Length: 498
Image 1 (cartoon, rainbow, N blue to C red):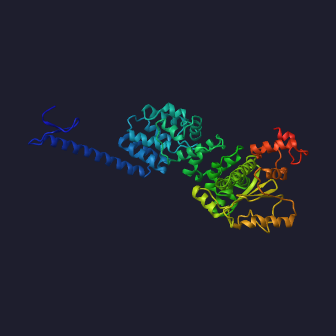
Image 2: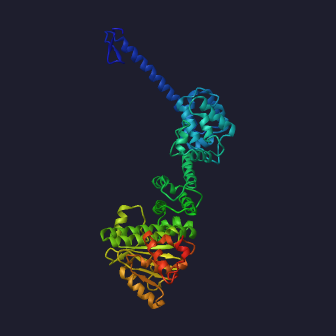
Image 3: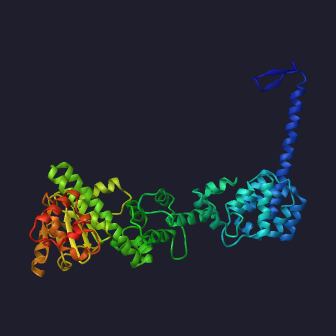
């Protein structure tokens, strides 16, 4: 190393100070020249930028681009950032002219490429198919993108949104990853990505089973995809609800909770949210979702019942499993038409704290209940009121008089425990005599035989065995063969031998 240099570290050397400072004067001169070039170039670019923003005629734009290389960057910047400029000037005639220039800077290439990609859709390609292929091939030849992969994912198609979505689903990739694999770093706020994500969500929904949780449900909520526009007056959320409810499979509670979070409970029949979602969807989907909500109501009710059972003796634990099997069995066979929860404030607060995303607008406040909860479910023409703790199960073959207790009306916000238990039973008896059931929950499960026999008209075409615990089933099956009247409870030998 020349002794005129001072070593700073292993890579950097600085010239020693000399009397005439010649080295420093040279560096200063070089820096000044560089600054002048930058300023001059920027001046030319600013001039072209101002020119392009005046929206000149097409011929002037082509002439400027072909004769002034400094005009390419401001043109590409405006293509990337200005929708009106893009609409007017991203046309076959101008792009054909630009593609003849093979020394575009990386920045100019990036602006041009993303300006086009970010605005792709299924309806307006801006370029004819030949020029579209040439456009992407240009960037492939310049090693800016992987042209073969770009073609493979369907971006060169006349319907790029649909094709990229199809490729992504078939290859278990999200659209962003599919584009990244081509070397394209798409703007996540662009119209193209918005369309990709929307269509990908709807198409992926059609391929999955709703019987279990899927990360897509979290994605829909976290990104608020349900708010995106579809076809007026619908939003994407309306399509999401339709796809889920139209699918024949059983639904995991996470899907019910997802819909409930953004669309609310249609049974409340009030507020702007009801009008926004359920008012547009109509009665078919309202009834379908009410069935799903009935299953969620059962889960909430069983949580309250389980908490009590755990705190008490083993008899109560057995009773909990028996009641759970009965209620979930009705839900599994899709027999529940509608439901409503009547919860004390402590239980409501617990749910609100642990599942703050869940709407409880249709839950009725139950007072003077000593922490007991009630669930109402309609099965066929039967109206079932089941309670937690040591509350009886009460079943009425027709609707209790609404003049006395409009128990399923959204306007009923609060009710006392006695009103929906003993008083309702007494009033029903006065109106319709003794044609109802009111049973305590015996520890051996015998209450269930009477209940199932009573609602048997609503249990056609199901295996009634699924409403019993294994212990109950074995007990009653053996007792069946010992009884002198084999049809006492309406169970045939064919049923027990299933």
